[in-house]
Image (cartoon, rainbow, N blue to C red):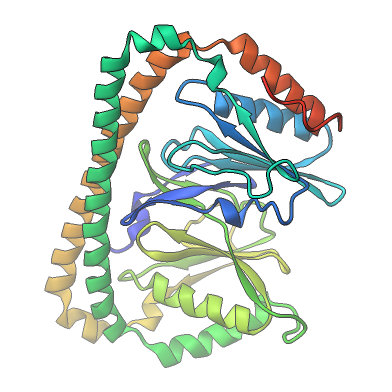
Length: 368
């Protein structure tokens, strides 16, 4: 396995990111990196079970906001990359966010009423009809839960193998040569250093999901693209040191970590530069990381690297298969729930949200 990123298929979505990720430690939410009640004028938190149309509601709201002249950032579900888990809307410096607040997110308002507001879709359920299907729902929920738990175990195994493999690769990495190159590279992708305090901003473009390993093209608007050609899985060592150097120079960089591997992509907003292992469109240059590894040292560990690579490959594939099974169970749950939802009520709530956010009407009228 020459590069961990061979697993990831591309989903074309500009200015779009994942709001969380499935990891070796379970589900991890990054909602705070995108939506904060300290910085937003209003935050709406959706509550509702499977099949209630939360993603559809947010999609309608996003389209209306965009048509209303607002800038929109879409936040996708890391388990189902075709489903929305949040939307950030902004106009004239005012930010408004909406997000899924049900498990596994389980978000609640930080400043209830003053900024955060619950949008409750549970009253849209026909509870009597659903109670008749309780046993079927219970079985599917168990299958779904077991699928995710099994996937997290395989991801944990893969992570341990990657860390072990990384220790061998570090012995072959030419740190002095790489740092010298990174310093020169940073000269060309940063503004004048020392003018401000550097910082790292999390922007998730990778997900190990129920529909496979997926990468969002969230940084496709970059003006300049530099391809990082991985070799012997040395990329996370290189990107970690590069991100550190950029921050040291006062840059505020956006980084995207893979769920297992480390920093995969780096975006520098001030200069519009994206450094990525994916060749999407025309690249300004290619940096082959082979130049920063000692071939002789790598050859000494070839057998162990090959074996660990095969083990990682098997663990990741089993994790993806387990997630696929969990996703199938979730799909069956939605088939049960959807006919038991009063979508006229959901539509009414959606229209009130659009009116309050896009048309700037009363922002406290979104309750069913």
